[in-house]
Image 1 (spheres, rainbow, N blue to C red):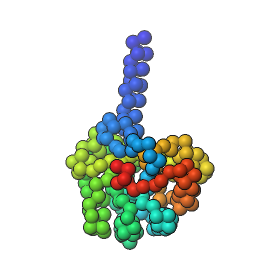
Image 2 (image 1 turned 120 degrees about the horizontal axis):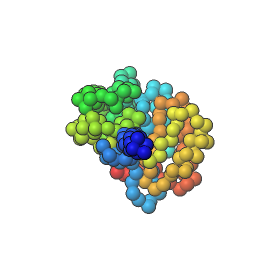
Image 3 (image 1 turned 180 degrees about the vertical axis):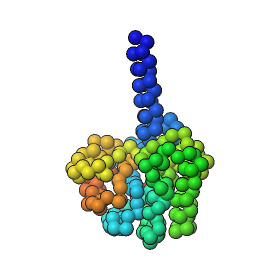
Image 4 (image 1 turned 90 degrees about the vertical axis):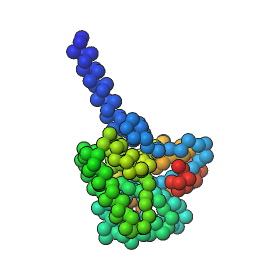
Length: 225
């Protein structure tokens, strides 16, 4: 019985640490803004993992045609060669955030000093293109832990999460993605999409139609915050 109880305790501890690290809304290590508490039917769109030389301009074309402001969390190593896209994002009134320089699969295992260096590298590149500082951060994979929290707090970033993870990178049919979004949709939602996906523009059009059908108005991140 003692061994069984110990095993249960260890499983409970592991479950807690998994939840604390992999649920961006947990707030255990780092407070992330995941949704606006409001009764007004407003949402904001966020795009991760760009810029992409082919898909990001297509997404921007749609947003411009619909007069919609969104937020783009950019990966630093993708900025070189795509400076004009970043300038366009800025010029067309969208918000730009830091999504790390490396977006490495082992990013959560970095020391706080290395994480801070990584984020500063991305920040410096963004500043060299736009001439502006960004205060918004989204952790790669949505993972938070003490080293990430320490680096982010030292840099003074505001962490932006989501309450709707579309899973548009998982190869699901668009109808399943839309069903997932519809199921989780509520006033003040922050929706996570990816502008790097091959059909991100097609999916975006369908998402916009869905939001329109449900009577939601799309606003910029500043209005949600």
